[in-house]
Image (tube, rainbow, N blue to C red; front, side, top):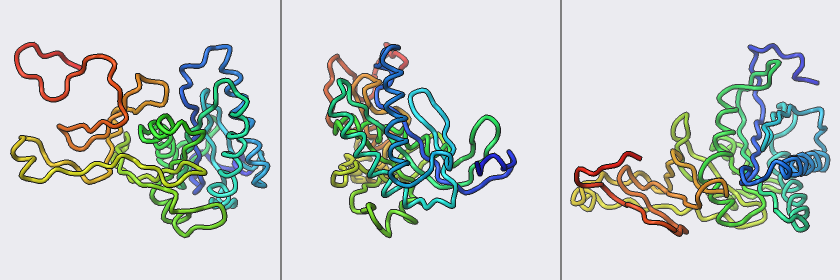
Amino acid sequence: MEHDALDAGEARYELVISVDARGSGQYSDAEKPLMRRQIYDVLETAFAQAGVGRNAVHLEDRGDGVLISVPGRIAAARLLGLWMTELHEKLRLDNRRERRPLGLRVAMHVGPVRHDSEGISGDAVNLACGLADSSVARHLLHREQADLVLAVSDSLYREVVAPGGKFIDPDRFSSARITLKGGEVTAWFQLPGRPAPALGQTTAPSSSTAAASGSPAAEEDGHVDDGADGDDGDGDGRAGYRAGRDMNVFRDVAFERSVHIGHTIGTDRRKD
């Protein structure tokens, strides 16, 4: 295998793919092996249909998902196009007969990747994992009850998606500014087989409105604060889009118990 010859300190530009299962915490111990088996089945079927040998890629098990790196000799466009198409089709067909349909969040980014005896590392790995775990990806998968959501980095979108190609339609992607652990980034999201998703973009209040309310103007349109994850079945069913430091815009949310919105005034102030 190509990766076996690499030194731990040597970085190679590779496509990193992070795959996470929806609502993995809701599977019982007895159900999890079946979930994992289905993940590997759809991945390996897609690799075979796309003409990518299983031994040509590096694959790490993540319990409720998989981390993959693909060497540069295999075109990223093949993974973004044919592989994603085959992955979605296999997952869609399998889910028609599953009692609990499997939902996957898939994220991709190309960047320097380092290999050692324990696996892969680097900022490219961190970014791909962060995109797959982002609240936007989680919320889209949950809100749309989709089989699959794809998130790609801005650089991968500009270099591979935007020019288009076989099975790659840039018009079916929507962008959002999100904040991950490493900082604020632009990401592009797609629901395979569907039109470009609506990401609940916010409109910044005017400066006069902000001054009157004592709140700073909202950040740029489409910004999502990923400091608090959205819901994909793991959480309590709420998702928030941050429009500014003091204002949260909630969409498609049902509050089932009392909530406080705004500043707490008085001495009885509880810490979150």
